[in-house]
Image 1 (tube, rainbow, N blue to C red):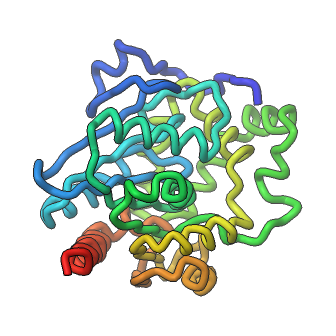
Image 2 (image 1 turned 180 degrees about the vertical axis):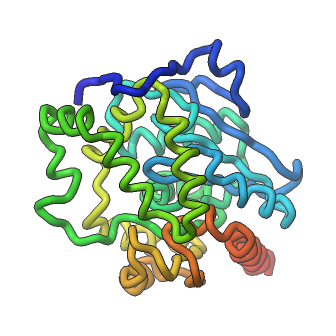
Length: 300
């Protein structure tokens, strides 16, 4: 799909604008990545991989909870999200996995990390795990995408035509994005906070291009083979799911469990699709406990 700037994208990411923004920036092979590496200096590192729309601010509730439990955290905005570059490239798992690999290498994270992926981030995390198995200590997947059945009207099929994708993105892009965000979170107040957070970052040029190019090139359905191959890696895996998830419905949990064969899985009550955002305290408890138990098994 040809790069475009949509109506309402009235800001540009450059050195001047980034000088007024929080976090740290590093130039990688595809572009500039926005990240925050924080927490106990001697803590094991949890790398947090976000979903389709979310910037690293999504993790702001979970990060201090993980720090309080002794974990150090690396949160970043994937290309096209938050304050990372809107690169003129194909937005697929290869791009995002390369971004994560280059970022962790640049930051000198040589010890195996605890990889946490939510929604689309779970697909990226599983792809990363296949390529860098020895770099992972544990894998946590929250509300993972990919298990919806393939349909003739799935986004990657509907948007296969560059002309159609560009037309829909320009004419209806912001409306479709806002509608998508409305289904993610169970609590209306949290949904409002999430929408404001995402839409603020979508004022930067190229944001809707990145969103729709991702829909075009990263399949969100029929990914059973990826789940199955991840399970075969035998990485200690924790699976988390919101009981009221309407994006990746809870009835997909059984399939995910059968394919991944996780050491632990847990359903979080009164929670929608974004458990790390909606229930950070409980999610941190689950991750920290799982990390500790995995370490104990290795030490024994």
